[in-house]
Length: 450
Image (tube, rainbow, N blue to C red; front, side, top):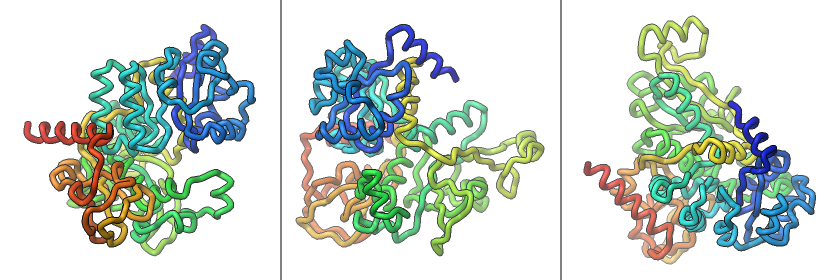
């Protein structure tokens, strides 16, 4: 509980935690807004495909131009300022950079950036959870081999959910389920960037003011991002994915103990030890009060009479049986919280979440009937959305992971609602992302065989 104190000590000693960030979009800009006021943290460099846009985002959050105006990484490292450029390889290789933050949102590029950082002996915080969803266990293996730390990003829901699960297990509770909230109705699955703001609850003007990317936000709405983040939670926490995908039961925070229990006891889970997403909307579209739309939760069990009595004595909210309880965090602040990961790695040498198993996977599911020759446009687009599946089912079925379903051409027709398979597409087998994915699938096959 003393990371802020330890960061301040690092500042006083003249040895701040030094980071480099690749990508300066919404998440990265939110981090910049907080890093500007954080002692003990030095952003040596920021790399973006559009440096001018990155500089504009520095201005947007109130940085003095002199602070991000270093003309080289060397000068930035020497003077405590920040260099903005477009050479990510130079940033990753620079000796002053201890931690690389991958913040592009492009899963294909993210895999290359992360593996390169490992080879350079750098710790990595991966904001691009889309990559973690399909090769997260591989990142964990590669980081250990390189002797560095790989971590999910605190502020994003998977790391926050993993924190709650860790809290529950550290306290000695049996975890029954964990997950996040969402705004969900079944027809959102077909949402596209053209319809996202009406469903999301923002005007076009609000979206433009916030420089919000409609394709990225549509990935949340159409179920892709909840599937991606649920896969990450499953693989970090050792929980299972539902066999037919997420159920999205509607409920308030106080309803979670009743919903997140096995079906045999009146809940929605196939069994104990699952991930799930709770919707803030009833089936008729009406809003549920005291919702968990922007937060995370863990459901745990009083598996002795004494624990059940304690729940009763302290008047906590449980399911009707009195056995199941949840702890939650109603809000997450995205990039505004990312410094917690930086401090955890830079000071304690601990990740804020890393996949150790391959239990959940996200398949590309067609939004409509697709024709041979069409090009898939990835998460949040017009052609596919993400569906959470058990990793064993996904690998056995040859499902194409959503993270690799961008800019690939279909070889044959795919029916609406069907999982796209490797055989359905023309895929570039030379990419780092493809090769690491195949290593992860081999690892899963070996684990199943054992």
